[in-house]
Image (cartoon, rainbow, N blue to C red; front, side):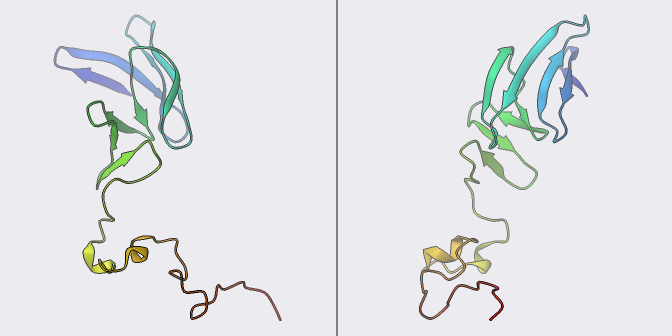
Length: 119
């Protein structure tokens, strides 16, 4: 993919299978950027000028967040903003309702965990 700036073509971005920029080259066929990403988007083993593009989304260098279409994503493996489903999908007085992975909301006696075992 070609990346442009105000003066024209800046470099070519070469992505991996999930869209992360692993290599960038200039028009003169020299390496502009070479790097890798940890599972949650943290860059490492980088050489050259930074071209941070995890899963095809560009990283904002000021806030250190990736710009996704509906909200931004942090390299800590979390979304720093609430789910775009809105406040109507959660109970603001119950913090466990914000956690989509809390199956029983800390009430094991009234909401037992489903084990899917055959009796």
